[in-house]
Amino acid sequence: MAKCDLLPFPNTTEYNYVYDEAPCSNNIKQFASQFLPPLYSLVLIFGLVGNALVVLILIKYKRLRSMSDIYLLNLAISDLLFIFSLPFWAYYAGHEWDFGNAMCKILSGVYFAGFYSGMFFIILLTIDRYLAIVHAVFALKARTVTYGILTSIVIWGVAILASLPGFIFHSVQKEGPHWTCSSHYPVSYEKEWRQFLILKMNILGLVVPFLIMIFCYIEIIKILLRRRNEKKHKAVKLIFILMIVYFIFWTPYNIVVLMYTFQDSFSLNNCESSSQLELAIQVTEAIAMFHCCINPVIYAFAGEKFRKYLYTFFRKDIAIYLCKPCPALHGDKLERFSSTYTPSTAEHDTSIGL
Image (cartoon, rainbow, N blue to C red; front, top):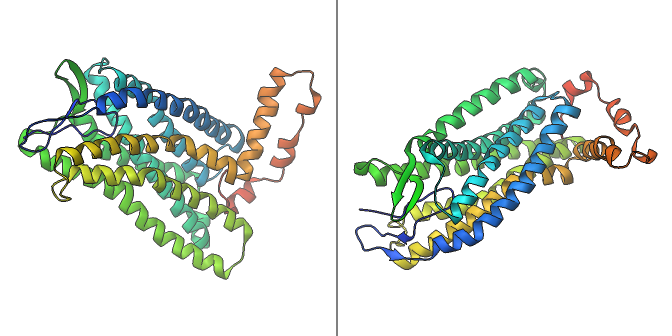
């Protein structure tokens, strides 16, 4: 009983297998080798620049004054972890695995850790909004930087535990003329392991976040309808957009992978359907990869403070070196903006850090 390896990164197999049947040839490998390397390169460039700017602004200008800042920083770090592995997958998509068994395991673990931690920190940001608006009195004591750091450590621990199967089961193996980095489960329980891990990914990465989001935003909307507060509306809007965008980018991939893994249950266990699902996995995964680049764009459009800090950074730290004789670029706008923000206002502020 053999089956085409299902990976959450470039598929390198040349044949698709249906259980207990002869192999079905397809051209997924050729498609991946042409389509994925340039796409991953774009994600790498834009994602690296965007998330690095978020980290810079949170540390240099915001100075991590609130729990929200801590979670946003960790979300950006999660995206950067995901992004740093892309050059290896881009090369792998067009060639074979040339980086050894240790790197195969480490990068597979990093991929899953980035996936789970990113989702978990978006959930924490949603819960943070829920506490700040629905349980405002309790939030004054609970929403501190210290608790933000502690919960972040716990979340990274949970994300690493959730990603351990990726680290344990992925290894280098020669398949035909090529070396691959792929998952290899115990032979006697291969199908069960595959199905369990895909169900876990869908439950932790899709079902649980969706249920938490529904509960939190129903309660938040109830409060906002009773108490008109433009500041709180803006704070909720940013996190709501982050959550919705996550589902838009990752839901198609999760659904297709679920269908691929349970082909028998969906009556799709034939060569044509299996090949189409493999192609769909490549396309939806490519869409999901772009999620690494999107969060900084959301901050730029929905976060007023982020735009001001970004403008100041380019004017005072970039333009000053490119155009030293331009006095118009050397102002004190940031100082005027920051003077209205004090530790006391930070403690009671319900707006999001960016």
